[in-house]
Image (tube, rainbow, N blue to C red; front, side, top):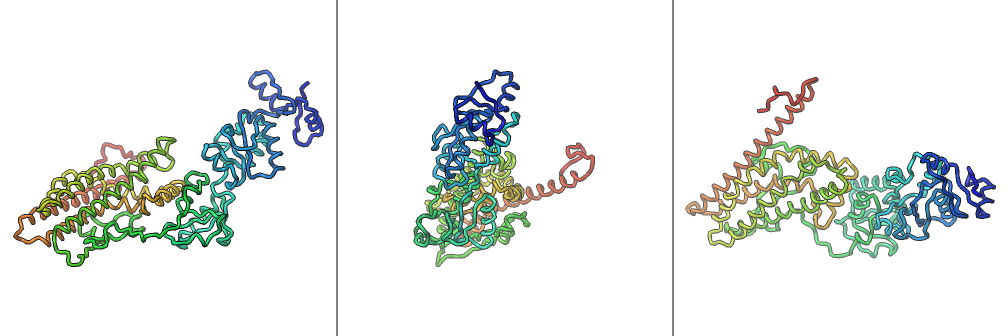
Length: 506
């Protein structure tokens, strides 16, 4: 005999039937079978079944009191799900209210849902609605355990301005701000900080800041073992790519200036002024050949910076786009920001190799100049396109940074060891700076060469060739600005399509 019962929680008759091992079903199960024109199926003895909304679901519970575990397990079984004591490969959902639970990282590694206890209660509240799938991803996502849930976080080595953003994001992702370092479960240390692990408790997780941004990017608490702070002698990081005795030192670009449109024209003099490119002659360095070696070193640093853009930013974004479609940047935006960087790498890899060989030549000055003369034709379209597009690329980057998920990706990438603490917006300006810096080195080389030396004419020709590239790039950028302004005006004219054949840009 099968009993139909509408109340599985408080009804005493239901409790009596269950204690006797009777077959009990709920009205939702009857409604569901009728809607599908399927025969009514019966539960096993002592396993009352109100609905089958959790059919095929296996849950494990962790970090929850025994009383609440028993209550939750009963509700899951009433809805057709099964319960395991521990996490296993058969588990589809881990139920917990803290990322500190012992089974959390196993579930995340197995790519299982980790949900709050209230998911089960929400499902039970909808038990009579057969049209709602409580296991659908869009429903479950509303109950996922936040990356910092249950954590108390303390930050070390950050400025007051940085702390404001970090604390806001901690609270936004359900973390708590420790009132004192001794109260923290996790201590997040800036990569620039110099601390001793002896200052903290052994029970605390001491992690570097990439962990924080990885948690936000992944929407789950990243495994702390992969981001442990390792106490070591921390060499002072010099963001200037040139060695101490450099002829040419590119000072760091002011962040606000980088984020805004470039005001000047891309000729050598304005670049030198806008980006504070200054020359300092090292102690008693008088030979032009030494400047050639300096040029090779700066070329290697420049190549390294371009490869960081590809490895740490472009490739991870492309991979995310292939896997599930990027919600960080559109394909057009990625093309605008990154498309020309691999081409610049290819061109400058050839130049770098040629410069190395040229410096070993007895007539190094002439051969170095010829390297730039040979490659000027290839560099012209590359730099014209890149510089003309640079304003737009930085604007996209600035707008996208308002997206919390993209901001988290950016911070996580910039804090990777391979990135060497470079910021993407600074790296994207490096091609704008490169040719002016080469011109300044060539001018210094020209100054060191005697007027009677035949190689001097090759240096002059190389300088002129690179200045022509900058002049053309400047004109291209001016055209882009003109098109952008014209497009803006036309879009404001009512009932006048931008694709009109009467619109001509000259």
